[in-house]
Length: 99
Image (cartoon, rainbow, N blue to C red; front, side, top):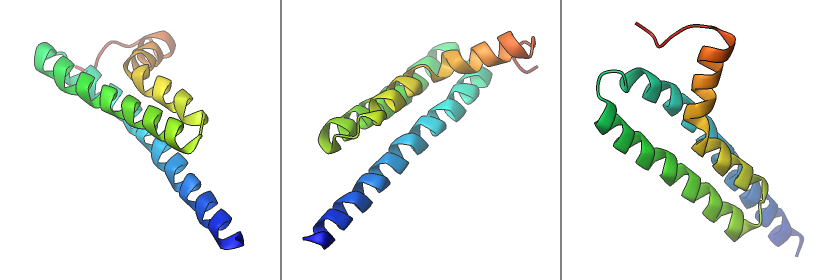
C-alpha cells in the first residue's frame, strides 16, 4: 500500500516537473518568436502558435488527469509567454527587437 502511494507521488512530481519545464520552454520560444517574427511573420506565427497551443493543451490534460491544478497556471503562462517576453523587453529594458 505504501509503495503505491509512493509511486503515485513520484509520478505526480514527474508530471509537474514536465509541465513547469514546458512552461519555461514556452518562455524561451516566446523570445525566439520575437526574434524570428521580424523576418518571417506569417510562418513563425503559425509554427509558434501551434507550439504554444500544444504546450497549453498538454499542461491542461496533465492537470485534469492527475489533479495537479497548478499546471493550469503553467498552461496559462505558456499561452501568455510571447506577451510576457515583449512586456519585459519593451517595458523594463526600453529596447526594441534585436537588430
